[in-house]
Image 1 (cartoon, rainbow, N blue to C red):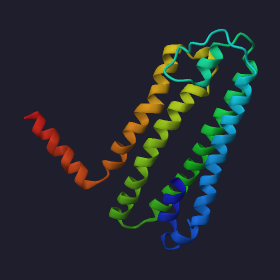
Image 2 (cartoon, rainbow, N blue to C red):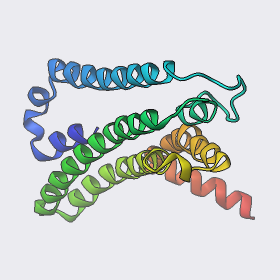
Image 3 (cartoon, one colour):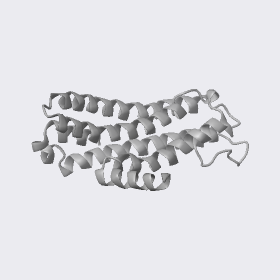
Image 4 (cartoon, rainbow, N blue to C red):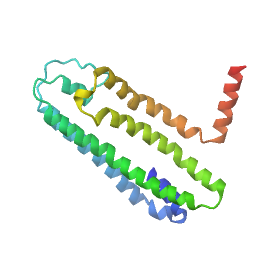
Length: 192
């Protein structure tokens, strides 16, 4: 989305060329390959562990709760988790922030205040969603496993798997004037 917004603001007349179906296919393929390779690496490292029990103290089968069940050393798994999570969080975040720095520099060049405001509001909702998602993922996975309590892990995983996706439609729809008017009417009716 950051690249899409960058092209739309920076060079709107070349949008169809810069984001051709071929380029979109490559972007999609890259996303799938990153996800698949991370999943295969996690699976490979988890399969080498022996387990003490079969009950996971968590809401879903995540890597960190699985490591707590292990009878063997999980040091290699913790290093692998940090590397894969770092790649999955840092690489997209750097790409997104780089795209948005280019977008911001182009927004500041726009002479019309109205156009500048519209371009900024278009990008700000995406940045908010990105910060919430990647921030909660970084909070969960980019620190030592000994520093993560079970309850903290449960709360954090609920936040990035349920709360953030539920907030996305709200974040993106509040840019729409009709939705803003409807929300204001609903809230004003409930207050009186």
